Length: 321
Ligand SMILES: Nc1ncnc2c1ncn2[C@@H]1O[C@H](COP(=O)(O)OP(=O)(O)OP(=O)(O)O)[C@@H](O)[C@H]1O
Ligand SMILES: N[C@@H](CCO)C(=O)O
Image (cartoon, rainbow, N blue to C red; front, side, top):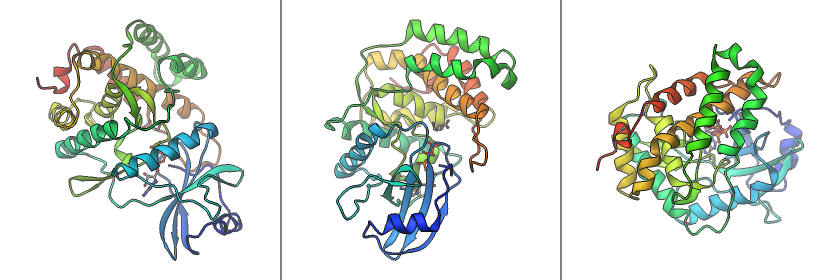
């Protein structure tokens, strides 16, 4: 998270008076993340996170996200639970923005995951996919293929100031993805942003998943592709086959990928790299003045995309027959 919206002591106290979570002992803005504003709240009754929803989260989607967290928690997944206020509502407003208080999860987000972490993450992702199957909410993926050209249009004119040739490369890739994007793959609830900062570990076990604000209905294998991108590359840009193998084996031990999903994996990895390159590029070029946020490097994903262009088969990600 980040802090785009400052919350004054008075605003916070007035908001918390509508809850039954004790009085505040301390609170502070959380610098991590780029999407929403988050505060850590320590009260006489425990620890919580206050989230104020910013630009990319549509208010109309909030009941879906909050309902999904409740559903997954009921299914035994360790994810934050929205806290209800005294009127029984979880969604409120602070500093003019939609806001919720969620429960705090214990655990540590690893910056440099090992193959063991990747294996555990693969299993947790598959469990999430299974746990979401009987959730009755539905939300199309607002950041899939159809969204990429309009996103690129916001950044195209300045793309080459970030990297020479980026505009041309992106144009070509968007056309190629449009022509080859798979349809009809097994679908359901996906997290769609399960990066290392959204997964907590205690030791080598996954202790919790957070940040469901991109969750949507889409191909399960697209979520696998997002995680291969986010977890299995090294800082030098190389793909770590051992990590890929561990993640895919961890996933398949819980839910097996079918033949169509396996065939689609390289193009799904390209698409997911495109999605994160584009949102990062737009953010890189538009940092709001005064915001406590560190924009993420779009070129990391341009390089990953280039790697995937040369992949012919999911075996090259470590998939074992
Ligand atoms: N329920 C929680 N329990 C403990 N810590 C949390 C919780 N929710 C958020 N955090 C902390 O706040 C940080 C930012 O949260 P989050 O990843 O949801 O923000 P974001 O802006 O949506 O981030 P992203 O850039 O990943 O989309 C996390 O990295 C974590 O440190
Ligand atoms: N996890 C994303 C930020 C949220 O869209 C990224 O690393 O670009």
